Image (cartoon, rainbow, N blue to C red; front, top):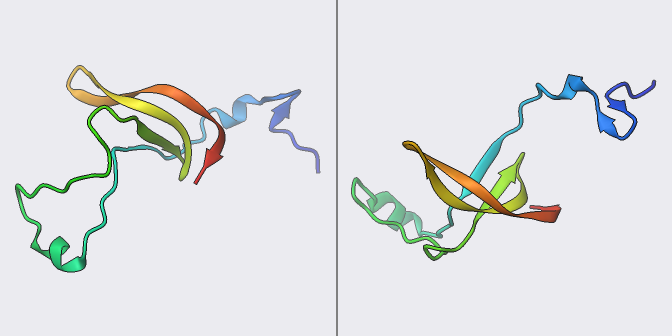
Length: 89
């Protein structure tokens, strides 16, 4: 069966409306369950990143870029600072 999603080396317009999951990870923390159960409103969970460290940008669970957090109007956003040569887990 021929692949009709490609036109030359470029994807056809049929794939432009396909949604992918995209998220940015500020950092991670490992907590014992006992500590997790004690968390409540106002609790602070320290992450493994510093304030000016880049965040990781994932698409469909693959890390594809590094970015920095910015504010656009009243929303958080990211600016891509580096696109990874190979998607990483």
